[in-house]
Length: 115
Image (cartoon, rainbow, N blue to C red):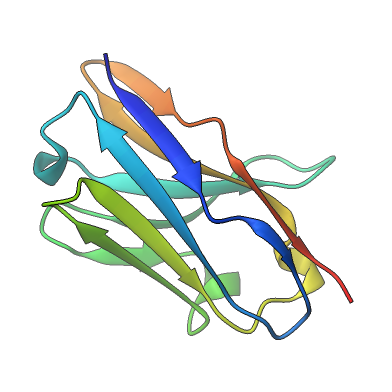
């Protein structure tokens, strides 16, 4: 069974930083593209960043130069380092991959940016 578990969310002031983690199990992690999505109330879920098996990275324009995605294949963990956070970054952040013919999602971790 493929399982993704996110952690690291919380309440942070504008301009602050957080690091999200996603631990994967049940897959040969190093072979898979891994994705971070987010969803705010009343908005569609959007792809924030992804990292391929070759460590190629892609970001949505709104987070470029502020967020960094990375992966540790030994720990089967993906990270999202978020800097200079703004209230617009407030959302539930989800870890995702496509494995064995299915979209696999974690339960999400809440990030709230507020003073």
